[in-house]
Image (cartoon, rainbow, N blue to C red; front, side, top):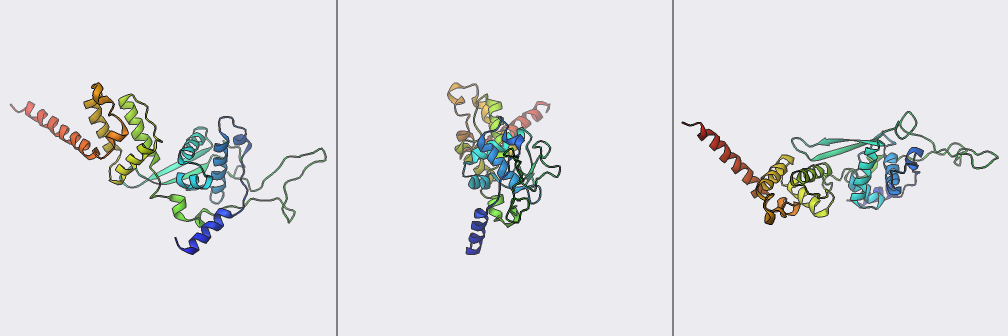
Amino acid sequence: MNEKEKVTNKTEENREYFHVIPNSVFYDDNLTDKQKLIFSEIFQLTQKNGYCYASNSYLSRKMKVDRTTIIRAINRLKELGYIESELTYEDYSYRVSIRKITINGSRANLHPSGASATMQVQECNNDGGTNATGDSGTDATYNNININDINNNDIYSRADEKNDELINQVVNYLNERTGKDFKSTTKQTVSLIKARVRDGYNFDDFKKVIDTKTNQWQSKPDMNRYLRPQTLFGNKFEAYLQEYSNNNRFNNSNDINKYDW
């Protein structure tokens, strides 16, 4: 990053603007205070175009919380209907190339346009209150961040962004097949799956490895404990995947010979 980019990023980080939390979100007891603040940040970023592409890594750095907190907040906000996200995958893979987040204006009780341009306050005394005013005497507005002005690497963080959707799919499938309860947010698990994705493997490959080793080890008490991410998705992943291919070739050969009279 050159000096000009550093100055630009520093300016954006220090830019003063208001965060707004709609009453529906603010008073929702199903959300933690941190999740409400994360919604507010997302809401602010969507003001320019009605959507934003903020990655978990970007929000983590901006909100000064770990990525697990961001992931849980995003999932919770989606579950409650406050936000919607649209994932775009790279060709012929489960790797997410971009995530588009929008605010559900009707759920959050926003202005019909999906955004409120002014910050209003209720009357604060019996004499009657007024809307918050700026120096000009007009309704004070909060400044919008132009997300196109923020360094693209901060917004997309493609090289640094862990494929949360794929990780969830893999861990959920592993739990389903083994009856165990591994977490998709464990650092070692995330790191291993991400490493295999960088090697070019996809969800189908993970399923094949899980199926192969589950069939071999699940009924064996001394081996069942190895049905875990650090064993299955480690440096023997390719060998386990090869076992699946060899087993299929053997079974297909037997099917042919069975009818070769």
